[in-house]
Amino acid sequence: MRFPMFLVRIVKVSADFSHLSVYWLAQSSREDNEIESILKCLAGKLRHELSQLQVIGMVPRVDFVKDKQYALMADVDELLLKADLGEDYVPVHPHYHNNATFTQIEKFTPGLVYNTDHPEEIPEDKPLPPMRMNVFGLDHAFILNKIQTRMKKTRAVHRSEPAHLYQDTPVDEPQETPEYLSAKQRHDNFAKFLKHRQLSIEKTAKSTKNYRPELDLYEDELLESSKLYDEFVDEFDEKDYINESEENY
Image 1 (tube, helix red, strand yellow):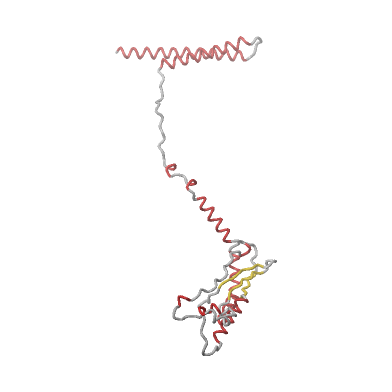
Image 2: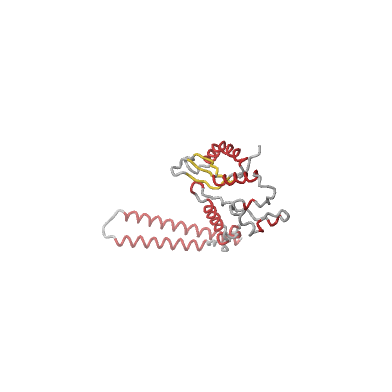
């Protein structure tokens, strides 16, 4: 089945949002009836498809309305094609059928006569009215232009980061190697620690005039530190003695 072609002129929504009127242009009366019957059948399907978009909660009823002005012009053109204008009638281009005074000024404007020998001289038809992009009161052209502008801004050069920032860079390993203390250095550091601790305990004991139980705890810690120091010194001297004897052998 071949679907006849038609052109939508304007789309209007009622004030109470109950129905949507789609005005379409009539081309010829022979196909207008067929187009009108098909559009009535497709109105319900079109409403269903619009509801699937989920733009609004309730889609209004769709009514296809034939534009009366263009329909009357199409009827006049069809009647002129059937009319018997006589044997001396000179055909003119359909573009001038809308001019009611054409027959009166024909003798003053001979260039308006349709010349079949030079079809390239045929005047252009009147342009059809532009299709409006404001269905449901939304300016679709403005919205699309705004989206394209935002997309161009996001693709700007200064917003794109260079690729070398995402390349894996080797981690710089520390150049310094850990320093291992010798036995003598560890011995000296530990002796300094014990001496500093003993001085802090003695200072705390002198600053207190009244007896407090914490002093016993400080004294015990001092004794333990002294014992620990003596044991460490003995162990250190013993290791040094063993190392010297092994070297002699």
